[in-house]
Length: 328
Image (cartoon, rainbow, N blue to C red):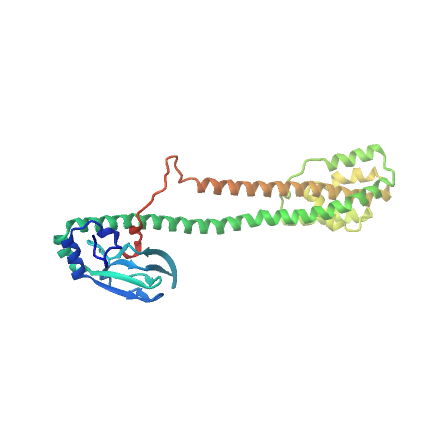
């Protein structure tokens, strides 16, 4: 049976009495108050630490602040192990509750190897487990950092199409509210079926989401020309309608014959209705394009997140005693 002071340490279970006696004689026990700092960055890595009671919470130091890293509970071993190259502590170790540790100085490891090769092999196995866990932890942290960057980039990329959808929805709401009144005003003047057909042909012509190509100067000249003509047709907001009609690809040459076939009193409402109809269709295209962009972004992220998943993936587990990556 293990001596009472070493009984909680799983790694010491089944060792010969002579080995346990040697450990009890050459090691020491220390008790720490709850929350007391046991190790801190810059300390020399001197001891193998076995937790007899309580626990140890380790913290990594990142960007000047402490972040929880891992915890060692009663029965587990941490600190320096045989053949470890750790020389300086890089994190904080704080007592969880009243904590009692069994400490063995690293200078005694060569003698321990002669006293109990079996225990040394166990401890080296623990160190190997810890190295594997540290590698997995580093891989996880790298993935989390990559995910953080991906999330920030995705949020930025999603913001533009989302904002475009919101702007289009607001404009569409205003246009749709105005349509019934414009239509009533237009038909009140009894345009001929031929004039209605010509206007409908313009309203159903193909539109694109993008504005027509051309220099800024040519665009400005075309807007001025069309706005002046619209005002001669009795349209009060000619400059505003001119931009929408040009965006749909309609020029003065296409509009003038259609307007001439309409009753003069019906032209302001007809031209306003036409611009609203074309702008509505173009905004629908904008919404579809923005929605497609969002769908593509989400699909790309989903594909990226599954790139490293294999069909034979299985979770890796470790023994509780191998959870001290920052101190091995």
